[in-house]
Length: 289
Ligand code: G3P
Ligand code: CA
Image (cartoon, rainbow, N blue to C red):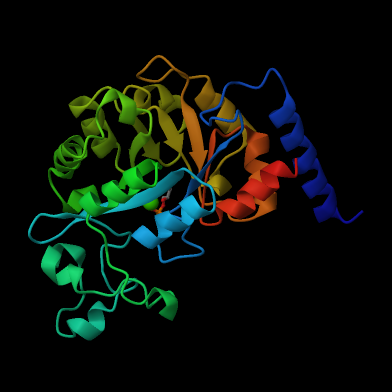
């Protein structure tokens, strides 16, 4: 057998054993398997971080969606990944003299004029960059759960408090909603701030802290969410061995897994969640085990 096929088979067997083993540790998902999270919505099939992308995730049967939150010039929270509007909107056409088109340099009214769908497909022409308020209402309408990323917090002083205030205003910080919400960031300071402001909230650090530092992160983060290519079964076990701020073991959501072999690989490692642009592909991979 070809070496790559042998490796894939070994990964698949390991994944199956892990999924079926009665001694597997409890996972974060409702089914007992790894939770599948639609990254920026079902972003392989609809423009990322739009209402269309979370509608698509719901249509595909997924409840968990991920997004990225930033702030406009006039202080409104909006859902968009890059710190510039250029890649995912027609801002260069609408405001040609405003390079480099940073989110923080445009008002919410200006951003509301932009087309955030045509870059992806003409079928999505007219799709808008959602405000966080609009986004939360659609998540609620769709009965979804949210992995909310505070993106580039160093650009937006106070964004943690502002995000929590909006979430509270939208009813997302009550007991019923807290189980449907995780706030994450690549900034440890930002995650720590969120935890201190709202200790009951589940939080996640994006990245891969050294094993020796996991106890320090566990003071304010419930999950460690690394790039899937950076981890191993040993690293996931090391994370699971640490108790987080709510007295539960730390969890691991790995990103961004878009093919079945990678899905089998990370399930074999024992991750609790898989963040993916193609949730249907990951689901099919898990079912094939
Ligand atoms: O949720 C994980 C992932 O979103 C982190 O990377 O750049 O896609 O926000 P990025
Ligand atoms: Ca993100």
